Structure formats: C-alpha cells, structure tokens
Image 1 (cartoon, rainbow, N blue to C red):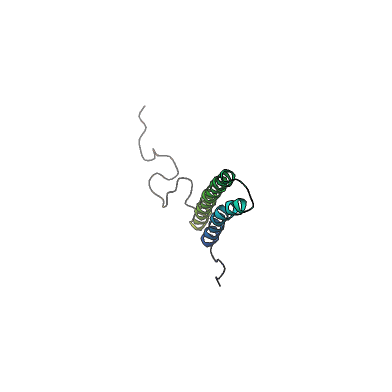
Image 2: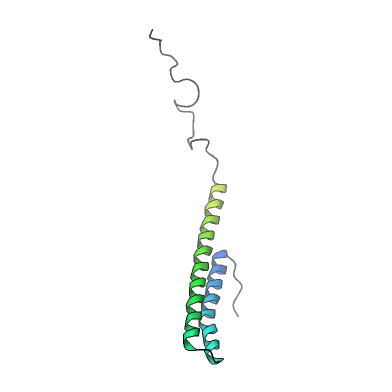
Length: 101
C-alpha cells in the first residue's frame, strides 16, 4: 500500500499520473463499449491535451507559491534595495560646497 503524499510536488505528480491513467483507460472503455476507434482516439487526444495544460498550470502555480514564500521570508530592504547609510542616503548632495555666483 502506498503512503499518502506529503508535499505539494508529490500531490501534483500523483494528479498528473491519474490524469495520464485516465487518458489510457477512457478510450479503452469507449472501444470496449462499442464506440469507434476514431472517436476513442479523439477522446484520448483531448484528454492528453487537458492533462498537459493542467500540469503546466499546476507547475506555474507551484513556482509562484515558492517565489511568494521566498519573498515573504526575505527581509524588506527599503525603497531601492540598498542597505547601510552610504554617501547617497538622504539630505542634499551639495553640502559642504561653496556656492558659485
């Protein structure tokens, strides 16, 4: 007996596996029940297309969730992503210069 999935990646892999299994099983059942071979082939192509599209969307969603989690874990670095109090932080840049009139 197989243990349940613990991670989202395992869940996606299981879902895709079941989708591919149905891509084989459904056309087989259609042929056994008297449907035409061409109709069963068309159904298989449609199921494979939907399964691939769902897999792509699930992977994209996983990447977006991982990216969001990484951004939330990283500390906020300010307006421009700089740290420290370098020479270009705040105040006027011309301080200490004499005015030329």
